[in-house]
Image (cartoon, rainbow, N blue to C red; front, side, top):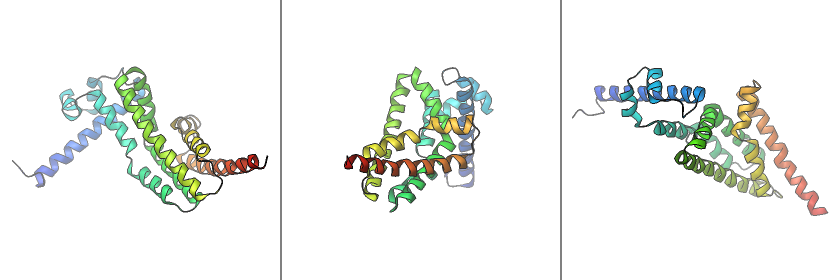
Length: 213
């Protein structure tokens, strides 16, 4: 058997990666245009310019293609790095700025994939469970950051902050502002950073006001 580290083996691996990427891109377009349920593997193969057998060999099923697309959003390295920077920040402004950056990067790369998964989940119980697990991961990350922000700024209520972080960073908000209203991703990030700072700090003021009553 030829060593995969040989030039020929490396070339085959590169070609396989390119083929997978073409299939994923074709499926993403199809799922977005006509819906997950209505898009067939044959249509994905035709759009990708490969045989349907190649699609089966690469992914095995349409559900596995959707899983691969979802994983690309969940594990996006640039967004994950920005979230880590937010969690490690020692200043509230810095933390929220990095968090806004992480959300911008994640939704810029895959907000349409999130919408596709939500639509597919409505029709497929197995996908629904997987999407619920992914949403639970997002909720957990937001809750952890909210607790961290509470450590950085006296008076913050982590539960209130968690609700704000969740609501302001929903993918549907990115979709509405960028896709429907024509904002750039930079516009969205700038708005989000400002909104987070204003509302999170405002929650401190509201809490102080309630304490004085």
